[in-house]
Length: 505
Image 1 (tube, rainbow, N blue to C red):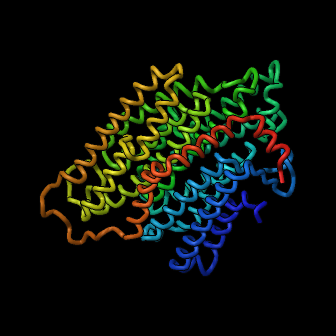
Image 2 (cartoon, rainbow, N blue to C red):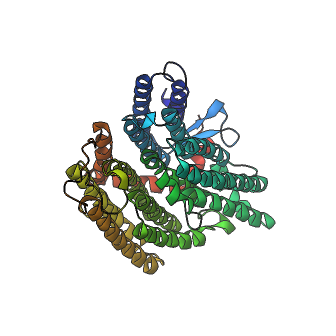
């Protein structure tokens, strides 16, 4: 069974989604929830086991149908991909538990759609070739289209329509880029492309560069990098908060694709195409951080504020990709895990605040006090401190690591002021939001007697996500060592090529 381990984070969500669509799961809410939760726990457990296994044994290449790379479809489980698969499975488990408190009854097929989304995201992280990256992109996008409409209204429909149209255009550009690269290189296996790209000459170099830049457009759209970011704030803010929390990992798929393609294929061994995306990534990353910070300051509700925090995190991650060194990549991985979990927690917290404040919802205006001010207030303070990078939480460790990784780079003179000023802007915006939501009330007796306490399952999920921040610090030594190992493994291009092209099972 151990030889099939790399395929299980894809197979389990797929089988679960199919089972949930069949009787009796399709007719019984209780059975559907039970099966969904049990299988989500199993997927997470398998992901953790795979992560530990890969950490101990090295890269695991799974050749589907025993057709080895580059001719067959391969899954590549390395330290980077298994880390992100584990993060996705954890976030999916949280979304399923939170949705089981009642949100899953507000629309159709919530649980199978979540598992299909996990299938697509895990597949995108594990695949070893670009065509199947496209396939898994489409799987996760189809599931996300339906989830956006979960318990939807006109606002959801409008945002979902924009999201669908943009991603359909992105998919077309993706196919064109893949066609160009396949015509030039004769392969779409990532390791094989990395081996052949340095051998290009003449017009083939320009064609490959055109194909690579088309992929950059697609990944920038998926990751919400400026100027292709406009869909994200409205889409995330209009979706159900539990869906938006799950979507916190989706922008990271675009970031991961940039990291994998422009480090492995068009990295330092790519000859004439070496680091071809670096100038574009750096400028767009800085612009995305600035625009995201402005969006946070201008946000009129907590969900829109959190959506713009996702933009800031995307800009930060892409800036680290542009540096193209091991320390920056290690800092990127730590910050990616931290930012994804805290963003998801803030989306879920916005849901509880909105429910308990009545008609004003999570808008940053004076309104009815929340039913559980101490519980929700403490959770918000912890999340806010984590986001702005205050000690002793993971945001502080991530920020110091990022600043240290960029210290000796040529871009430090630009990045440091932008990043530090942005951190101060986030502090101001989150302080204003917390003050408005938890301190400014219309009257002391304005609390609605009909308002009920949050479901314990919802509170457990939020506390669990927030608890990951101090855990990332408490176990910082082991986690940092893992992140450095994953970064070294990613930047070891020849080792990765040998493992994939000679190690298929």
